[in-house]
Amino acid sequence: MSDQHSLFLPCPRGLEASLVAEMQQLGSPTLQVREPVASGIAASGTLADVMLLNLHSRIASRVLLRMGRATAGHADDVYRLALTLPWERWFTPEQTLRVDVSADRGSMSPSAQGQAPRPLSRTNGEPGRAAIFPDSVLFAALRVKDGVCDHFRRLEQDRPSVDRQRPDVRIHLHLGAADALLYLDTSGEALFKRGWRAEHGEAPLKENLAAGLVRLSGWTPQDVFFDPLCGAGTLAIEAAQVACRMASGLNRTFGFERLRGFDPAQWESLRAAARTMRRDAPAPIVASDIDPRMVAIAQANARLAGVDDAIRFKQADVMDAQPPAELAAGRAGYLVTNPPYAERIEAKGSEADEFLPRLGDVLKRRFTGWHAGLLLADLHADRALRLKPTRRHVVYNGPIECRFFTFALVAGRPARRVGDVTPPAEPA
Image 1 (tube, rainbow, N blue to C red):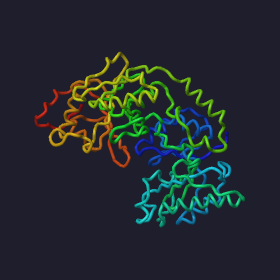
Image 2 (cartoon, helix red, strand yellow):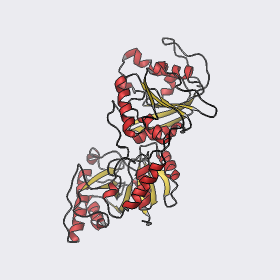
Image 3 (spheres, rainbow, N blue to C red):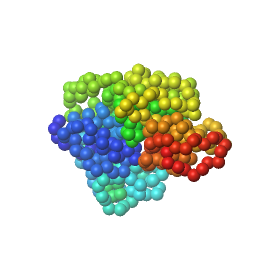
Image 4 (cartoon, rainbow, N blue to C red):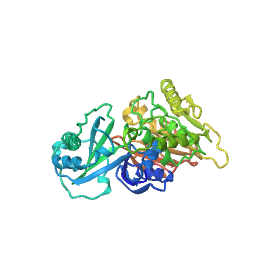
């Protein structure tokens, strides 16, 4: 269990620094975190660290254990790499497997790029020669599977079977500019699948993106948290689990549980230690939405997440929002939300055009002294809000490039009435 392994943790693009901070806060003396690269973090650690990361990381998408790397210009190179790796150390041929592929932009031929998923990393931060991989990702995945199966045949064992839906083992191939990296996926299902989401509305935030936004906002568990456009409740639930010291992976299973080399007794010890950390939320957490159906969904999700007693839900229009709690001495207030993007606003025409200006007026008029964090697809939404952000964080909500604007709301001139001519933007 003390051997060091090379790891890679993909995450939503824009949250790399937040993931580094999260990993460092785990306090493991054997976990070594490297510099962030696009959409992920390379690291090294023990198998105990692998379990710890899966259990506690709120921002990573997966924890990948690197098996090998080789220069690869076509699919036969990928096959030869898979053929030589010691798969028998980690699983048996009786277990089913699945191979997933990701690729850097520019590493696939134009015909193959149309089949490539979004990039997972920038070749793990390691440089390579500029080259074009001519084969499709589907064919590359097939050649990895062939290499794994032929490896077991060389050992005079049976060939593993493929199961795309419920595999015992997940293998991940990443194609860089001139190389290929093969990983074992120790997470199984993606880490943002916490196991508590019963229902969701349109365009829900993934849980790990929500967790990253909560961290980027500057909120701490000692502060009041308010989401006035809560939808399915993802932001408030993530904040509540942080406030209650609940491990994000406490109520789900992981891929490493079906791999050789992991100590079940140590895993249960880590889970037991996580359970003892639970506490009551030290400050109010409030979530509201104008749609009563979404409030009900958010409440159901919070119950499954084990934090329904930590969040106060209510039905309310964001345009009527007021601070939900008095700020005691030394306690700050944070309004963190994911306002509807233009394509998600049901109202059309002038009403839709007025949404952000009216929201900015609400924040400026009623939330003086608070902090705000808003995720918006409009890269210049601060102009419509008429608020000057303290930071603009570039983040991606799936394929959508967004800005997470943070604001310190201080007293300004009287709010604009709807219908007035919008003056130039001024500081919040």
